[in-house]
Length: 513
Ligand code: NG6
Ligand code: CA
Image 1 (cartoon, rainbow, N blue to C red):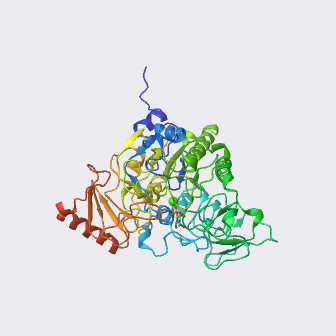
Image 2 (cartoon, rainbow, N blue to C red):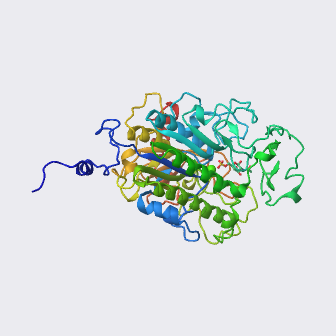
Image 3 (spheres, rainbow, N blue to C red):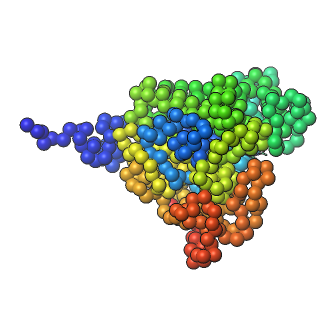
């Protein structure tokens, strides 16, 4: 005889939750079931066309492709900016970066630009009972403006909601070239103190400018200051010799730390922001990846990054956490080929198209600047397939608040929209509109993209990227012209006026949520 009593499993299925593990705050009392862990795998400068599941054929990314085949792949998802610091600022605060001065690409000596005490993505996860960690590239500043790398480094991630951090303080190409774990430089010998300068030269170590014969990789633009590990960087540093990183080991080092964090917190809900150095410059993969792609160091860095993704996925599998973990894979901004080192990226492209079908790249107002690979996997809960929903990393904060059953205060996360239904695949619709940031601002709404007039250079001579600047307004129909080849502003003055006014209004108000 068939029972009329619903088993918990059946009930969960009917209400749209996966069996045994799902967390439905609106349906279940706190503590009744386990919340999903959340892991954000955040690549650096990885383009829309750089991975197999987005059409790359010249470079193989089996782990990312596997993740995509098990999850939901977004075709219209964006970072908030076409460079790193502003994108990350937006992702962690839920605020458009252009609202705040000082959120541009930061030097390694910058103060932290997220004020302690404000609501952040990690702080809301902490509030929901998660153990929170960030491993990898930070680039949001550390300290209060006069950081002493030899003492306690504060404020930093631990002051804005992370319980643990293991950091590349700024970028791989910026000093200081050391790791920071929680509040201290790792492996520092106190008799060899670190000094850092972004102004005058400091110490007496050779620079790339004066001693190019010491370099194993030469700069193509900038990057000619202190030499660390045979590579000259942006900025000067002296001391800290024992603590300096070895670029070739960086992916292994941070992946081990990310795995250890997962392992350590496997019993509790955890939130991990795993922020890789790959595929940013300098591209110096471990020798075991050298030559693997046939595309030179840039392609090899993609292969290495894919390996890192595989390591995280295998760790979740080994610990039996796959069904309990929502994994998001994405990138902080679009692709660049020559970003300042002579690493054969241009010469060895071999037909590979980092931007895929999109125009522009990193730094650009065209869509390749900010439309990035974006996959969400949570087996049993996130519907598998493809989503065209308009999504942005700035929305993680509101969406994770919703996932964990929290209400945000009115002043929190001013531009973060709750798109949880889209992220889970329950709804084909994401945000209504999105403001994008590069040299100028753009507004995406439906099929239309409006790029506000700007006087900047049309083309970057350093990176050879079209920046999207134009003194005339630009309007593109992304549905029929994804590659933004035909500016139809003159054909649709009414739409241009409407979108310009809307952008102006969003700029004037201090919030859009
Ligand atoms: C640029 C650097 C580039 C990269 C970028 C930041 C030069 C000439 N170029 O200024 O190499 O570091 O800043 O990249 O120095 S990001 O992904 O962190 O935003
Ligand atoms: Ca970046």
